Length: 138
Image 1 (cartoon, helix red, strand yellow):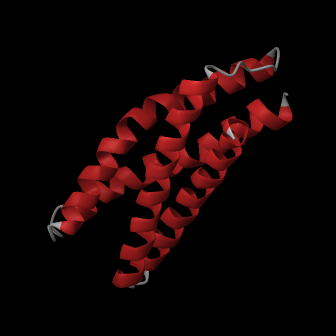
Image 2: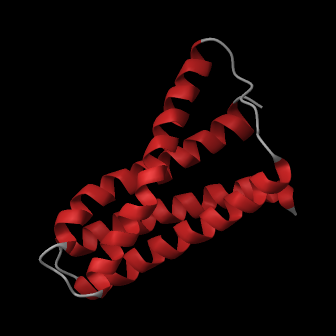
Image 3: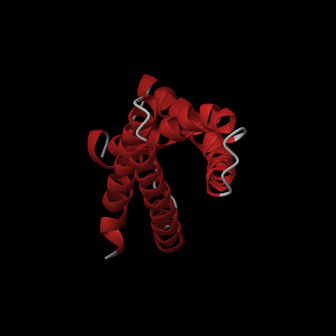
């Protein structure tokens, strides 16, 4: 069961990215209810990812990158930026969501403009890290 969690995590990250993109496109088209649903789905899929990620690493430990040379530098550059931004994306997403749920629409868009690109990068780079660890350099 634990062995499938990296794949589950990648799927949840892809879903988060997709929901974020669809939510962004919806708000650009002034489809507020559709935007709300997609952003809630992005939050739920990200929360499920976090639980699954913690369960996996609690049980499996650290996965070592097998690539060499330049690819190792590329991997660690992506991993470092991903990890650093992931630390900020969760509180940013929670604040942005809370502002929306509290109907503080004077502040919500300002936070969302910062949160969206960080959250999308973390989701997309998470999938890339998964591919590099489990498929490209295995």
